[in-house]
Length: 346
Image (cartoon, rainbow, N blue to C red):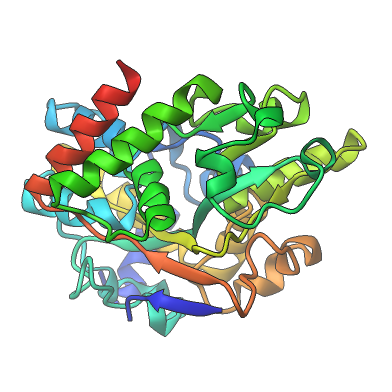
């Protein structure tokens, strides 16, 4: 795997004692279809804490809700490139993960990441990539370039699926056009907009949910996809006698890492910290990976992952593939992304 751009005890006794005596609630706000019920059941049984789950479909949705003053959430799960925004806007509080007992299990490459250098605000969760998945039986050939997605051939027009997550779609477009992420050049962003507007007649849905269902039933032939979600879709497709392939186009895939953070408005801070420590245990993170289909940051978790997931092509990036990590955009480039997306959906 070629990484074109890669980044990089609360005393243990008291935390464990707190977990044994804990009670009350943990309000978890996480991505759709991203939380293992088995892992949550184990957490509830071991700690006595009841978990209430609410979900969202994009970083933009999460950020907008928190900026609007949403309360009642104890843990949120933003992607790495949004972490600096949550910190700079004062939406999250310090947790100092390095003082948690199970932080010792975190793999070195996920410690002190660029988006949280002192590990004061985040606990690492899943990591993965964004690309496209497709139905080779319906497409009839191997997909090797994002050009086949953004400028689709006639046989797949009207059967294209697109994330409802503008920063990721714009990043995929940047890869195809050979542009930099977080682009501040209006002329280059106009090219992105032109590309997405021209693609629009071929799009059956702008949605970050139901992507596997649409692939399996043939509503879409090619769709933007996350690698773990594609892994889950492939298993479902095989049960139906069909095939889904996660593509590694020649232009590269977009790398990402999600983190657990505690909002400043959290009402159950100690329970949130107990959960953070819990998820850094290899067995618990392995259980979470088995459900979500993504790789994780914890040393030893592979022992608890299914052989199918450990060997999955979706999480084992080919040696000759490029994975380019995105980063937090400044206000100027973010406004350009928002403007492009508004014009595309108009």
